Each structure stands twice: as structure tokens, then as C-alpha cells.
Image (cartoon, rainbow, N blue to C red; front, side):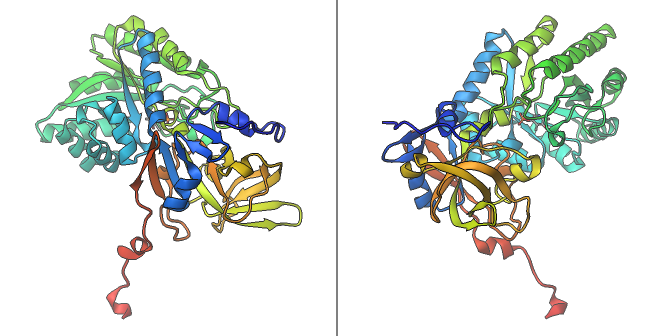
Amino acid sequence: MSAPLPAPAEAGDPDFAELLAQRPQLSAHALDGLCLEGVPLARLAEAVGTPCWAYSAGTLRRRYGALRAALKGAGLDASIHYAVKANDNLAVLRVLAAEGAGADVVSEGELRAARAAGIPAGRIVFSGVGKTEREIRLVLAEGIFQLNAESVEEIDMISSVAASMGQVAPVSIRVNPDVDARTHAKITTGKAENKFGVAIDDAAALYARMAALPGLRPIGIAVHIGSQITAGLAAYRAAYAKVAELVRALRGRGLPVERVDGGGGLGIPYRDEIAPPPEALAGALAGAFKGLGLPVMVEPGRWIAGPAGVLLARVVLVKRGATRRFVVLDAGMNDLMRPAMYDAWHGILPVSPGALHAPRSPADVVGPVCETGDTFTQGRALPELAPGEVVAVLDAGAYGASMSSTYNARPLAAEVLVEGDRWAVVRDRQPFEDLLARQRIPEWMG
Ligand SMILES: *Cc1c(COP(=O)(O)O)cnc(C)c1O
């Protein structure tokens, strides 16, 4: 079925064949070209239009299952709370809900999405540095599993809201362990200078205070040190060791601890990063927490959803600059913001069988948005890509559609779920009328 692909590309960049070898959900077929599970992506682009996102249900399920098996294999009593912000599409959430996943949400909108997808409130964690009184009221009324508080101010607010409702809020304290996750500065969250969590040295006193406040049940300690962590597990181990030490200190003071929350952040290989396998994360959790005899929680987002998705885009035109070849796509930074925001590298594959096997030369792949930052990649070894040719931007399942905007008045792209050889549009392309629908010109302007 699969035809051999020519090697090798630019020094340092993985070849097309290497990109495919690491992504079992993708395959290159001699007749159909690039397929996601059993669906030819050229056909999908034709039917749905571009830009569009396509997610592999099998990949979501496989990765969720692999993580669950790793946690179980390490002998942990663990629950997985998928971080909804990575991909909040209802069908994606439904796939994970059906596997028994819980959710980690950071807003009323995410809570509503998780609930609509069938994730019970009793499996949902509410995180975030800026929970509003309205949101706290809502999650308590829903019967949320846990709130992760990030400041003394928030603890006082949760206490007074819960008490006024005659409720007892299950609250963990998110600590800032001051460890360096060695990831991109914009997704590092566990350093003392980051806005997240309470200083770990203040946590014991705060926990004691929480136990004395009305309307609160202290549950445990939570930590989340950053995202796209690939630099080994040293940072996880350091953070978890500090949390375990804190739990022992709390118990020493007679304060009950019901569980610990190890957060998310496990990275994936976009280019050639060596990402720790879930077994390694499970080992780090077990090493720190198994001796405490407590259930543990994890909150992965990217690790589950990232590899499951691609962004399909069509070549609008190829512009020959003085020194460079610019391939201009109909998808831009408003669709996939990661290259502009984090200098992220994404694999880019043509979907047609001919282009997959054609000789390659360096190209800059850019979007149509009026920003220099609207560049997917520079100097990438790609075949001649004629206008109309479709490309797939890989590993776009996490922090892709969920971070999209309508900048440049560009409607949000369609989303598709693929399952074997079936596919369905799971979010319509936003109609242009939508962009104007909730705007109005003041009456006095006539
Ligand atoms: C973003 C976030 C996650 C998920 O991070 P990933 O890198 O996608 O795994 C988990 N927990 C919290 C508190 C977060 O803010």
C-alpha cells in the first residue's frame, strides 16, 4: 500500500518518512496520498474546504489509554483530567468522556463544554488564576470534584461564596514549586516569578487557614510546572518531591490530605524532541507519591490531543521573492498561532501522492495575515507546491483551533472528526455573517 518516500531533507529537520514513522495515525498511500486513519486528506479538503482541522478519534483514544495504562502499571490510584483548553471541541471531549476521562477546566465556557460532552462535574477540576465569583458559584452548584486555588485572596472568596450557598467547597492549593521546567518562557508556569500558584513555603500556613475557614474542605496540593516539557523528568521529580514533603508536613500538623494533583505539561515530539514516555511520568509520580498512600491526579492536554490533529490548508500562490520561495497558504496565524507565539516547529506534509514523492528545495511557508509573524516555517525542504495543492500541518490537535481568532476578519475554520474510514464535520466553518452578527452601529450615527 505505502510507497517509499525519498530521503533526506534539510539538515536537522526530520524527513517526511521519519515524520510518518512516528505518527501511526498518518500514512502515505500511492493512490490516495496522505491519509489520517482511513481518510484521504485530499478528499477531506475537497469536501469540507480549507482551512480545516481534522482530528483522529483513534489517536485520542489510544493516547488516553496509553497514559491510563502507564499510571496503572506504576501501581498508582490515578485519575486523568484532560485539560480542555488544549482542544475544547465537543466531539473531541465526547471521545475522551466515553473513555472515562475527567476534565481540567479554567472558565465557565470550558465547564459548559465538558458538561455538554458528558463529563460529569464529579470528575472536573476547576483551575486558573482568575476565577470569578460567578464561576465559583456555578461550579459549586454543579458539584465540582475540586477547585485548585491559587492565592489567599481566592481562598477567602471561595470560602465566602460557598458559605453563602450553604456549601462546602473541595479545595486544593496550587503551589508554585519554583522549579525550571526548561520549556518555552511563555509556557513556563512553575517559577517563582510566574503568576501561578502560591509560594510553596506559604502553603502549609494557608492550608491550615483553609481548614479553619467556613465553607471549605481542604483536599490536597496541586502543582503544574509548565507545558511542552521534553527536557527529561528532572523538573517533574523536583516539583513532586517538594509537594510530597509538603504533604508530610501537613499531616505532621494533623491536617488531612485526600489527594495530590500532578498537573499536566508532558511534551510531544513536534520536530525531533525526545519526549519522555507516559511510563516515565508515571514513574516520577509513583516515586514521589506512592509512599503517601494517596490517589493522584494528572491534567494532560497536549500529550493526548496534540498528535491527534492536523490543520489542512491550500496553497493560494507561490511568490518568488528576491532570495526566497514563499508558499502562501489559506491558513494563517489566526488559525494556528503556535509558530507566531512560541516559535513552534510543526511538520508540514503535502497530501497529494505526487507531491509527497517529488524532489524538495527550501521554502518559507506563510499565511495571508498582515503580520510578519504569520510564518509557519522558513527554509523548509518542500516540493514544488502549485496553487491549489493541499498541505497538512502536523500535531495541530492541541492549542490549535482552541487558540484561533478571527484576526483579519477571517472566520474560524471547520473542524472534522475522523474515525476509521468515516468522518464528520464536528464544527461548521464560521459563516461571514457571524463576524458581523453581534455588532451594531450606534443609532446616533444614523
Ligand atoms: C494548561 C494546563 C494543563 C495542561 O497542560 P498541557 O501542557 O497541555 O498538558 C494542565 N493543568 C493546568 C493547571 C494548566 O494550566
